[in-house]
Image: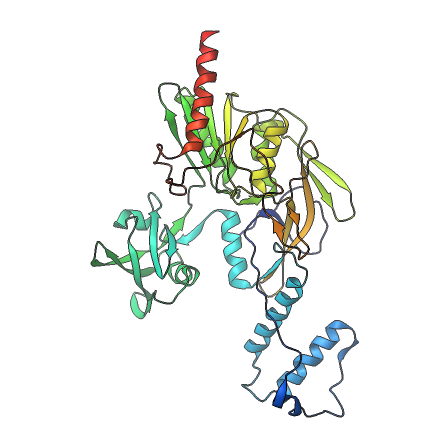
Amino acid sequence: MNKITFPKNRLRRSTVPVLTMLVALPLVIGFCVPDKFDGAFSSLYALVQSPAKAADGDGPLGSYQQALGILKTEYYGDAITPTKSKELTYAAIRGMLYSLNDPFTSFLDPKEWKSMQQTTRGDFEGIGAELEQLGQEIRVRRPIAETPAYKIGIKPGDVLFSIETYNKGVLTKTTSTRGKSINDIVDIIKGPAGTKVGINIVRKGAPIHYLITRAHVEPPIVRYWMEDNDNKIGHIVLSEFNEKSDFQLDKAWASLEAQGMKALVFDLRYNPGGLLKTAVDVGSRFIESGPVVIIQEKNGQRAKLNVDPDQHNHKRVPMVVLLNENSASASEIVAGAIKDNQAATIVGEHSFGKGLVQTLFPLDDGSALRLTTAKYFTSLGNDISNKYDDDHRPMFGTGGIKPDVVVKQSEDWVDQNFDDKKNDTQLQKALEILRKTVTSTAKK
């Protein structure tokens, strides 16, 4: 990544740049190591009379360095190379964070941190296709409009069976998708703009080969259309809160206004969250004044992140906000501010229930820590966090934003298939409410 844009008003000071965000997609890696053996193995210990001296006194860091030193000199298995030492250190950091019992605190290795930066920035270099994994199959969910994948003819439902790697235009390796995770395949497909990648797919039983030149891709975070032309009800879907979200939302709103929009469905279903600053920017568009969210640091001190009046550049119209159990973090900040200020009707199901703020701390070797550093409350001071059981596991449904109108989604609706209007019962309820409002306003 070439550039990171950080929030202007950070709540914490640090000697390294940090990125404050709210996401509900934890990376949790746990492991268990037995501390003794039973039976015959119990007699196979050899005592070391003079253990290696700790490098840093008797502190925890010294103990770690001592243990790693003993591994390097005494371990019977494969040699502990510098690469292996790094892997062991990463595993130790993950284990340390895992012991905190916080599913939102984690370690990101350099590859994961680079991917996270691309997510928050809102662009990447690749072919521009959204993939999904169904069982052992990795298939195309949809090509992003005007990207290399879209232009060359990749279609939704295409099944990937191998990826070709090229070096200076010469095929060097073919990787089968069998047994690979979707993240493995994405890592192979992504690459510098201008380079080539081969995609072998199956469509309706027939194999097809594509040789695609990668490009810079900025996937749309916002999708929008006029849902009801007769009543001029617009529909905006915001899929996440990254650096591009507010700009794209502003553009979508302006386009619908130009079409005569009289009411709006603002869709936050399946939005897992994102940047705190972006949540404040987006929330500022819907409420007049006061705090969008209240942040509480570990010392108990609270800070109000207030509305930015420069965001009031669109005419307010009657609005329904759609939520479901996958609407989390930044989505809940915006929905909570809207609900507290009675700026719209909330329809759907209770949201995820994540009232915590994470901060990303880059480390010197290109990795990063994602740590829970604060708690947040809605603009009226409501705590939307899920409660935890005795094993510190979140009890979903005990927190979140509660809708004004609860509507369970039809089991016949395919997740995020916004073209299926008939089976989208939550959307139908939103349209019912807004049609009554538009008609009532017209009669006055």
